[in-house]
Image (cartoon, rainbow, N blue to C red; front, side):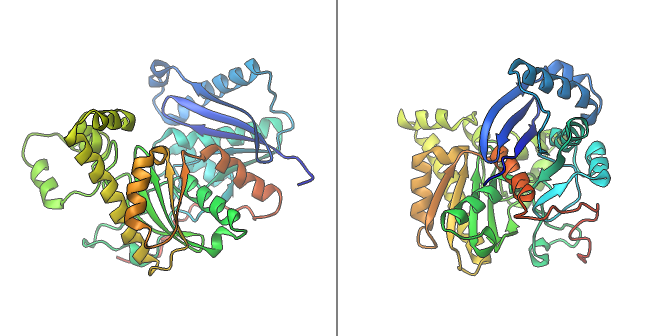
Length: 368
């Protein structure tokens, strides 16, 4: 590539913001900018944190003697948007408005597009978001549940999953849109997704209690058992929500979400820890098999990603369960910053056309 593009990626989290400066796909600088938790609590709305986060980011850049002048593109994580198809979106007024008010969700990720737009306005360059958490490419048949007033929605890890899908395709000299893949992101939450020719057509709801259990999440639980717990008088609504989404899984069984700690306990002879960890692995493998059927068994590869994919024991056990379906390839860790930069770069180089956010849900035509 003759021209060198400078891209600044922004990924806001609960109490920190990851930033990275790239030249094409080469990372020049990266930092995880910490924000004072007490200070963040002073802000009533997520968007009210914007000036404070911007100031701390610029301070971090100044310490590293890095200027944002001449940056070709600023790209943020995004979020708070209506359901949309995957891709790289130009930050327009509609997208910016939805991010500011947290149209669909209140999360620090919504600051990504706001910061990208502000920096682009100040320093020049373009502002994008890439495969935000709102990506929803489900087939209509995937949306139907057993209750007429409950529709299934896509809540998984689109940014990291699509990036590893693209990386795998590139390793074969192919395009992501040419392949059928089952990709599992294995981290604090676990998502397993069927990717058909570049679309995430079905997945477990990693946010609302579906699919495999995870370090902090309960996963699928028989609904009647949950109903009984809710009406037992033992738990408040908040406590039940937390058990499903924050303190379930390994935390509920073993009192920790740290896999390295669980592995150490297993090494020291803790048979219950081994049972629970094996059960989580079993559930991931079972879900991979289920989503392979969505692709009618026509699966080019099974990709494992996320932080816990660094554990060779887990990889070996899952591979043993699913290798009959397709080859298993591991992309351990997460590639969110690289994915943000890569999405912007594809647009800057003309490999992709930027998408326009119109504020209309992609499945607005779904009929219950």
